[in-house]
Image 1 (cartoon, one colour):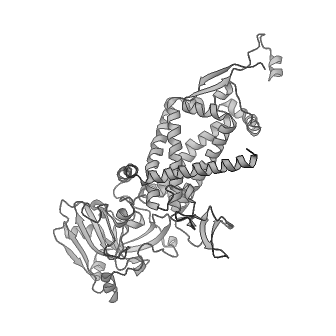
Image 2 (tube, one colour; image 1 turned 120 degrees about the vertical axis):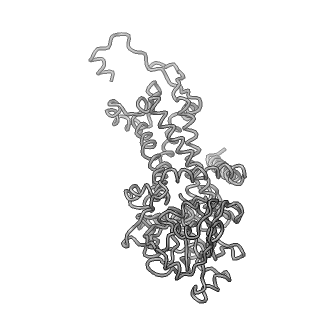
Image 3 (cartoon, rainbow over the protein chains, first blue to last red; image 1 turned 180 degrees about the vertical axis):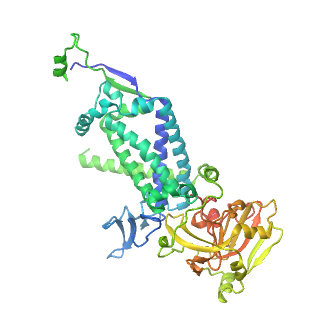
Length: 287
Length: 255
């Protein structure tokens, strides 16, 4: 392969870039304020009401053998010591105290359900408005059908794409200007499942909204199940963000981040096409 | 720089930038301008909740099989105010509920009088603002018809509930409020029974509010008086409820 020329391509349109960064702020504020709210009752249940003696998950603090407070995480039948992070961690006073999630993970850092709720509901509005705008724009601008919808070729190349991802082999040619199948599926999961799902589970937790969303509450097994699903989807977002940021870091972070700020993405020219007309056999060999 | 030095430096840098970021978040949280901005979402939320649901849409109701084995009591569970202790001493025989404010005929009702009024029994879910839920069976008298007996004046817009308990242990008493139109919701009742027995002290004896489309802090316990008012401005700190004043909980209490 000859040394290919580097070109700048306009990869991300302005609305995508703006909505992406609004979403970054929303997700951080919602996640951290959500953990503040969770800390008011750091336990999850399945069902219509709270089975206080049998939570699905709980973060508790108990005095250890030395009299010092220990944090314990319980998930189903599993229990483990999580002092310093979950159940018991450093409080504003500087001492270890009972806290579901630690100060560095919550907004605000100090313990306040009311303040956590104020942050949460403000950014929930912004998240929903931004999400609806994104959906409408993606549909109208054909971002959805043109860039995100998997094509037949995408599905057929799925196996190859998985292997390339596992080898950390990322396209640098014009192939890098379009989403690969795994990217498409990940983004579609976020915009079609995680986003609407977390909003609906949030609404299902509202006693007021339940007067019209009772069917949804029943569908997921009750209001406490809805709260647990809200929490699970939040951590699905965390998993997505971790993988998303990791992929940015391993596939040329400067180029990637620039493309989400200015829209411009640098790529190499594809190898020049063979001047001789390509025959069927050549094509097979070259493939 | 050796590898361990560099690692230690990077760790310190990460910790420091984390602390700066955290500090920045908490500084933002302390800023009055930011608080005003965050609170600006409360009025649209209240409007949206009412716009998205019919005014008389019922909260979910359940069956006896769904009752929580233990109904958790929260907030005030054992009031020590002199007026409450005096009522408790002879088991609420001297109890009177006052209905006053912007009404044509103020009322004063004893417990037997309240129990003689039409009643409604509902098995509903109590959702605490903290996140937990309990299902209980409440019996009480519908609030709307009771207020109609007193005859609200056209100016009346809000219903204020005055309680006998004090969470601060001082002169300050718990209070709550709702829109007058919400008092006419079929499930808005003044409850005197929980799970078929007279309310006990932890759950709000002798009378408490049930407004089933709202969170737990709106379900005022230990009711002494109901006041119809035009505005919430002159009451408490003006935010419509004890926790709304004290902590900044949303007045709508619907989510």
